[in-house]
View 1 (cartoon, rainbow, N blue to C red):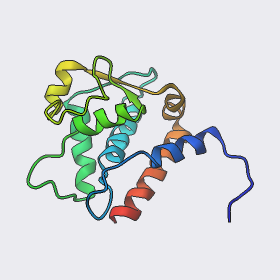
View 2: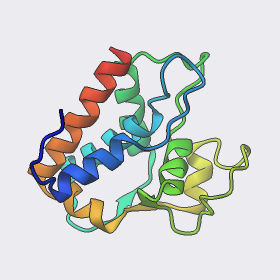
View 3: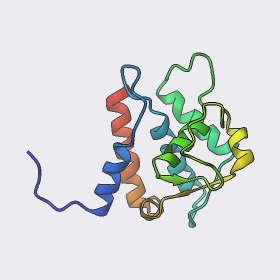
View 4: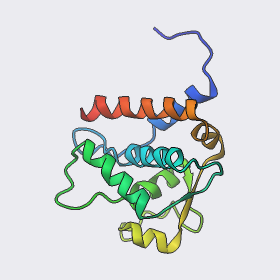
Length: 155
C-alpha cells in the first residue's frame, strides 16, 4: 500500500540513488557504486567540504577499500578499483569527472585510481544531489538508506 504523503526532494534523490544501474551478473548486484558513494559522503563529512569539489586521491581510494572490506566482497585476490565505479557514477550523471568521457565504455580506460587521477583529480556532485550531500541531516539519511540497501543485499 503506497502512502499518499508528498515526497520531498530528498526522498526523490535517495530513491534515484538507490535505483542506479548496477551490474547484476552474480547473485546480487555489485555494490561498487554504493560503496563509492559512501566513501564520497564520508570524505565530505570528515574534511568538512563546503564547495562542490571532491579530490580524487589515494585517501578517497583508501576509504573506498576500507568500506569495501566491511562487505567482504570477493575480488579474486585483486584490490577493489575505485576508478570504475566513479566512471560509472559519472555515466549515470550522479557525479561529473571533468575531462573524462564517461560514456566511453572501453574496459582498458582507468583500470586504476592512478590512471584516473592522471586525467581528472576532482569530482563534482550533480547540483541537485550536492545540496543534499552538503547538509548533515540529508547526508545522514542518504548514508542510512545506502547502508540499509547494502545490508539487505549483502548482509
